[in-house]
Length: 400
Ligand SMILES: *Cc1c(COP(=O)(O)O)cnc(C)c1O
Image 1 (spheres, rainbow, N blue to C red):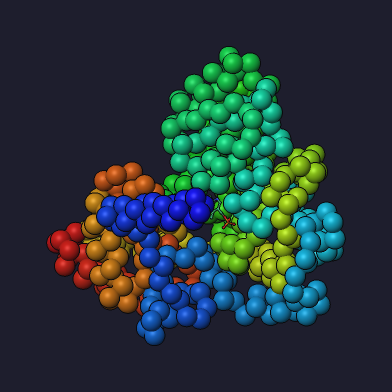
Image 2 (image 1 turned 30 degrees about the vertical axis):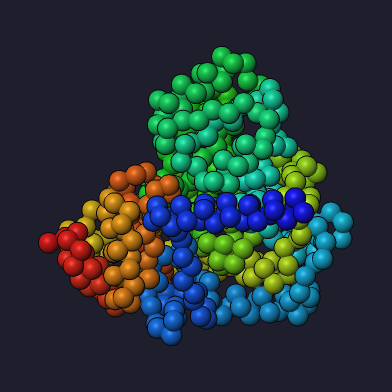
């Protein structure tokens, strides 16, 4: 009886939390797509231009990946029905892991169900209470959670603030840290800003620290052959994590790449690896096909960055405030949360699907619409979108 009452009160409590989210204007509503993800998507029977997917190279609906997934499923079946170490490791898993490692210039890699799991499982097996992890304040939620799960001492530096990073390195050394790992996103996804890897690496060398980079918003399109931000900067780091869910096909799957001993120990100890199912054959087969395409996709990468250049120039000419850069993440700054939501809604009515971002995802007063380019958007698409931004921006008083 008490249990029933407890549950009723609990659900009432949850209802109040939800009402609070609604009252704060922070309720996220999922809009339904019918059919495949792409430069255009169908929503409520309407064809929309899509400017908010992480589909940088436009591979999410690529027929070559669909065919590779089907072929892999025909050969390997639907699911593995096991974690990797019991009876869930197919030859294809090892081929993909070695392929990812080769692509990134690392000794080996280890697959996870998602990069969220990769980051969640990375730190705890590698670092103990004698060690230190120093993390950028704007790192992805999965890095923050992964660090919370490990016993190393935690230090945080203000986003890309190299003086602060150095101060934290000094503190960690003064605190007697055995090993120090600096953790950063390669690209900060709300701003499209690149981590200052050359300076981070120099500081790491100076203080005897190692560097881990989460390159989810970079792998496949930044740097030579799309090898990511370290390659873009002409350097290498100690550990890389990434996803198959963005430029590399857009389905799911994550990985950690690094020295052999790191990968070997993670295979023994990383909890999301040990206690969660192996990736299914379709995802592994399409992942290999995605790497084949990506390695030869200089044309797609050139188109992606040309699109980003054209899109930025067009928005700036209209008078919008952008964050500077060349990354295909192009944030249109609007200030207040309500304005970002109104702008997104107005653009939706005009046939352009975008998402407004506001507190707590970005700081208060820095609400924005984060647009993202992809290689499959045509000049016609971008001109259509610029016209919609012009109309919506004038209507809402964002531009003249
Ligand atoms: C998207 C993203 C992740 C999560 O990747 P999944 O494979 O979707 O779990 C982790 N880190 C960063 C920086 C990301 O952008």
